Amino acid sequence: MKRWGITIPYFDRTMAESKELVAELPGLGYTDAWTAEVSGADGFVPLALAADWAPELRLGTAIIPVSTRGPGLLAMSAATLADLAPERFVLGIGASSPAIVERWNAGEFVKPYGRTRDTLRFLKKALTGEKVTEKYETFEIKGFRLERAPKVPPKIVLAALRPRMLHLAAEEADGAITNWLSPQDVPKVRAELRPETELIARLFVCVSEDAEMVRKLGKRMLATYLTVPVYAAFHDWLGRGETLRPMHEAWAAGDRKAALEAIPDEVVDDLIVHGDAATCRARIQEYVDNGLTTPVLAPIGAGGVSIAQAVRDLAPTAS
Image (cartoon, rainbow, N blue to C red; front, side):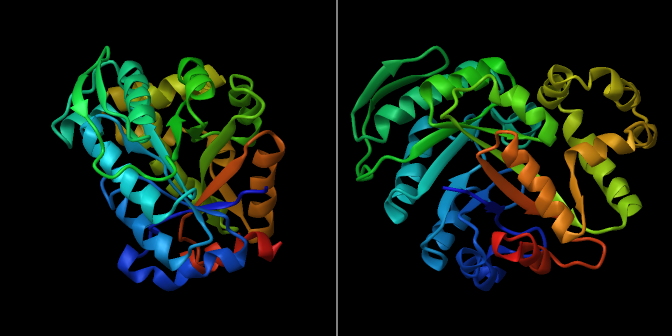
């Protein structure tokens, strides 16, 4: 099945304002709606609404951090969504970042790989309704059992950028989620997975022919993400280490303006899909042709094209 996802809530409106545009998605050819959880909407409530508004869609979190909730609470939230959307909900979890876990949520960002692995193993047991008493490397569970386990446990996919986590996603989870990569990067990521492993990626898309404007906007977005250690390491692995070194040096020195200026236009063009709608759809198809299973579009409203129009123009039925 060809998958074509969208990110909700949309950047220009709240979830309460999104009902009509979410309900329209299946008719436009979208198969999936995926949330994120950073500092806006949480990852679960928008999917609970979408489960009712667009019952044809597969729903997923990309991602829920494993260190901002306790394992039991995470299992309860996942079980609730799995009950609302049986066989249509996919739980995406990941390590997240020190800023989100520690600075914003008063948690501890310790052993991110181990915490993600242990949470995955706990959830696989707990979501079947099994009583879990087990000492994992990063936490211990004593006698947890879901009061209401879902009839069909959801699939679980992992945020994974480099080989170790990608291998865990392939061996123990139901798929991998990646982010901030170009179509040409997909084969390197795919090579770390099994051929049948689902590979999901959020793609930031700006339907605009004003390349200068998109690049200016894109550099601000990229500087925010690519200076995070996990993304810096990801792009070192992808081969952009030397290209991005001037940005990292300026950022470390506290010179944000110089950091933005140090990002080459070519990197923005690699990592953000932009152009007219037909060009954007063709670029998204390049990702799929290179091994991406599920593109999850995140339209950016700019250049006179509203997000609602971009959602419609980027849909499979528009091609």
